[in-house]
Image 1 (cartoon, rainbow, N blue to C red):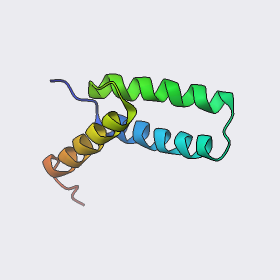
Image 2: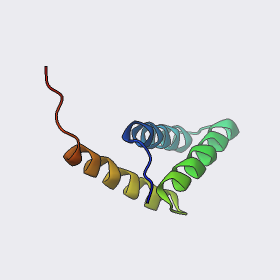
Image 3: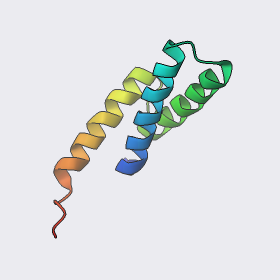
Length: 74
């Protein structure tokens, strides 16, 4: 199975969280549309259909990527 690059996953997760907070504090129709767009993208790249599931899978994939990648050396 193909996986999205961790930097893309991280960006999508952060964007979802930011837009959800904005929407909860009285966000606009534009905020709602942006959240729908990023939700769709995150679901596609994680192979899921629900935002909560997509966030869970993305976080799991990010955690897996952290354990697989060797640490940066100076």
